[in-house]
Length: 207
Image (cartoon, rainbow, N blue to C red; front, side, top):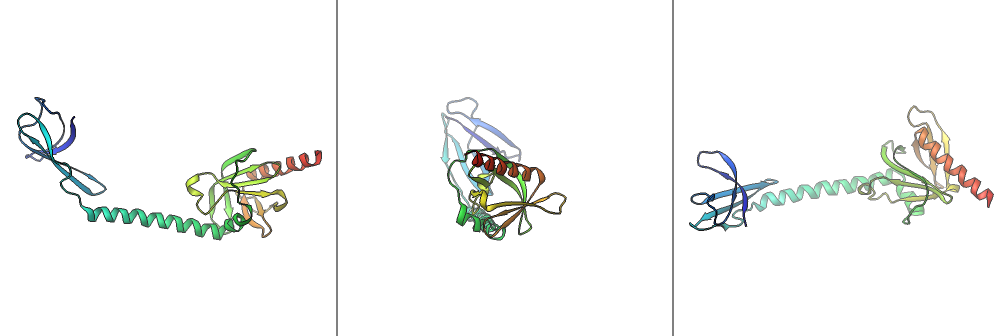
């Protein structure tokens, strides 16, 4: 057994030492060591009893006040993240669509990922996934951590419409559902969706 520790010498110089029991390299006398994680101070003492070096205090001091502050900080940012994404779901109309078109199965069909879209609230969503098959249009967020309050959607083609609009980046408007929740699309994303819609119509006509 050994310990890798950062020790402070009387002359103020810090150095790393690996301490082995029954090793001629063990330090003379007792040594005090410490390290910090997120401003939480851990301290212990290695005692030299002549034959072995052992830990006198495994954790000598732990500042629980600072630990609580760190936990509060993580909880604050976590709660802010969840509230922000829920609000975006309301503003963008995603919640309205999820009430009707939530999709939990494995999707079969071509998909494109990390596409830009402009929501009706004016926010730009940069991690959109779109997919097409004979059933309809898949709409999702590409990264799982971003899917809170934004479940995956599968919208039937009868509830999907695309129209051109004036714009330099977002040249098309995607209208979804009976309430026509709008998303601005780039030209390549619009072409992908229109191609999937056309293929679906051809397959239905062939049947």
